[in-house]
Length: 454
Ligand SMILES: Cc1cc2nc3c(=O)[nH]c(=O)nc-3n(C[C@H](O)[C@H](O)[C@H](O)COP(=O)(O)OP(=O)(O)OC[C@H]3O[C@@H](n4cnc5c(N)ncnc54)[C@H](O)[C@@H]3O)c2cc1C
Image 1: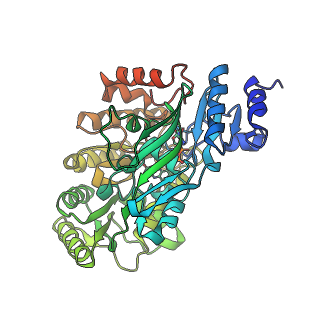
Image 2: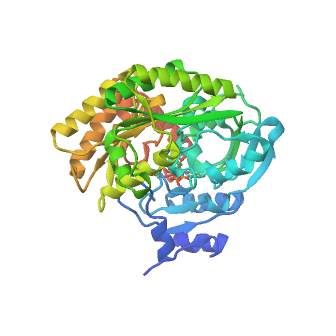
Image 3: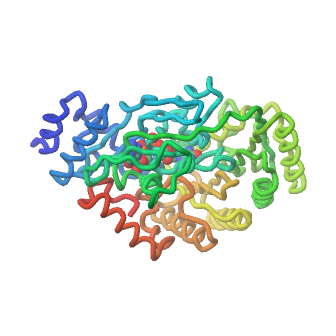
């Protein structure tokens, strides 16, 4: 088989240690954690330096070959599935701490640094990077998180990734090396180019260094959960807790159907029936005590009872959810949403969606960071209550549009990728043209992750 000219060029510039073409390595880079069609890349590059990244972008630009950046490939919207005919740039080899300044609560890392590893390294200084991306925290990279503006269980109190990124080094699609942002918490020097790269899903350029602000580890925390017989009441309790319990750091909904799947696992046989709200409060000991008490009062007024104390860590349960639902829907997997609605719209939005699926005899699981209004509805494509893929995609689109109509968004955290691309113009009917113009400025040849986002 004829070798693609980009392989010759990259091997000449970088060597075969960096440029990988074995079928196993190409297959591993062909998919992400969405259940969308894999695409085999032309080759895989594992750069170790910014200079090597510049060489890759230069070669791709010269030959008009697309580039898809890859962190850990945990995207749930097909963002890190290679664009057709693309070179994948895998940042796993650029994973060092480049500068650590605990006195200023900041750290600069390579984009391949893994979220949990970074927090492990920061812990002796009493600092952490808060927006934990839940079940992928042990593998997701800081480059991937910055590029999707990832959030997670602690985003309720601390925000998503964006407010913690103070500076970036990037290579634009035009091949320019650029520093954006500054090593201070805030800058008003011109238009904010840094924030364009946060959440761009690799569509403007490649991030080669990231400086993060850090938070002090809270002096104390307390976690637990509440069980409800009525899903709408659980949603109403969550919006009241988010609004009125200032110590609340995490607030996660899990519906009874998802709890049933978890209960089928040997470790969780004793999990009680019901819909669950899992919570965590942060502060000093007395703040945590007061916050937990306030949350218990809010839950009680909505018919919620505390989760029995023998139940394991709620976050262990939370992190197993995507896995158990996908497992139950093999071999086809799931279609999922990531829409977000204003807090007061949660009870109606969730119960109407669940009721409609029930009437149609279809399975529908829901969980999410309800403190932020984020709802992950998962529709199984196989097994009990299976949806056909076209019906599930139509429902995903309907829910995204309904969320926008309610004043929310089609994506609270996973990004647009391929899965939300068709309805992005509905959320930004005017803004979409501005987005396209901005993209063409940074990436005039459209080589940066084409077919995603815009
Ligand atoms: C079980 C599970 C739970 C999850 N929970 C959450 C959650 O709670 N919150 C949440 O926000 N997300 C969640 N996710 C989604 C995902 O983990 C996050 O989006 C994560 O930030 C992606 O990191 P990654 O390193 O895997 O990036 P990838 O998937 O490899 O890449 C994501 C996007 O960023 C681009 N990219 C990666 N690195 C760079 C770079 N250096 N420069 C430019 N572009 C780059 C890629 O091209 C792609 O478009 C979850 C995923 C799974 C599988």
